[in-house]
Amino acid sequence: MPHIDLPDGIPGIRSLFAFRPQTAAPLLALAEVLLRGESTLSRGERELIAAYVSAGNACAFCMRSHGAVADLYLDDSSLVEAVCTDLDSAPVGSKLKALLRIAGNVREGGGQVSSQDVDLARSHGASDLEIHDTVLIAAAFCMFNRYVDGLATWAPDDDASYEAMAVRLRDQGYR
Image (cartoon, rainbow, N blue to C red):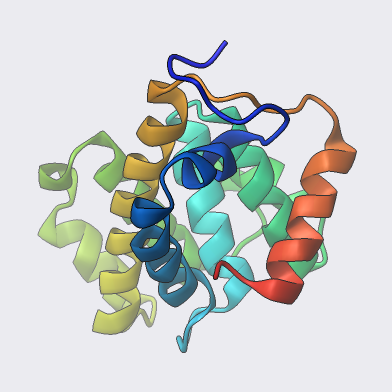
């Protein structure tokens, strides 16, 4: 049961956006830029970073919704689970693994990102913009995860709900 009076039947962060539209607009704009804006990281890779951070924060709603979007973009329904279960053996490239490690360290605390982490990402071809955006996606999703779980929002249990959200986000974005 949510900690505040949220609209019935609207899951996760969407219920919080409906509750307070004034804060929704800038948060949605940030998500749009980070996850769908111009970048050398694909939309699928950026959604994967969001899902990975959300899984580490045990935020089921964000992990499942952004994992479903990543599945659509990456056309691989097992990749998100593989990355979230065991990054070392996951079938992703070395640059993305290095960026995901940075994201995981941001999740632990910003000071956990070391110059060695950044150097490793650079050695695998990550640009400063990709490193920047990875850190900002991870930091933003720590906030989103705490927002969703801190107010005990409702999250559906069925995969079909997340698949429908993923199609809507892929087709319409975060605005």
